Image: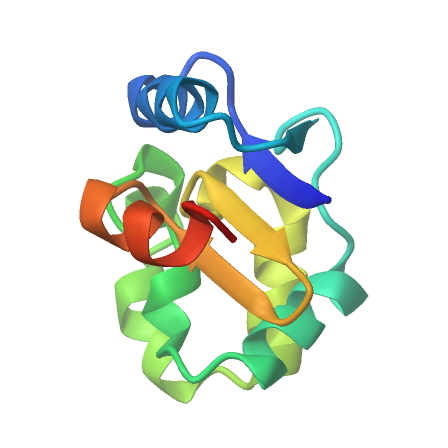
Length: 119
């Protein structure tokens, strides 16, 4: 089952959810704010992904700027980054979709088509 981590008030998340619904993709929703993933799970994502660390951070978010993470990220380990991300769901780039070893963050229709359509 596809896990769809989202923040219901986020317009990008709502667009992604609409796309999933319109394309008949089965998923279960997980609220990133109410059920923020634990550091161990996020560390697993970071370790298994070939994406740069910034792929997982909501770099446009207020909290990201407030904590001055742009300056901190280049020297962070995956363990440190996972602890920071787990501390506040608003720091995580959303939505996050995961099934098995496949994962995407954010919403781009072409990426969704490639990864989640007819999976």
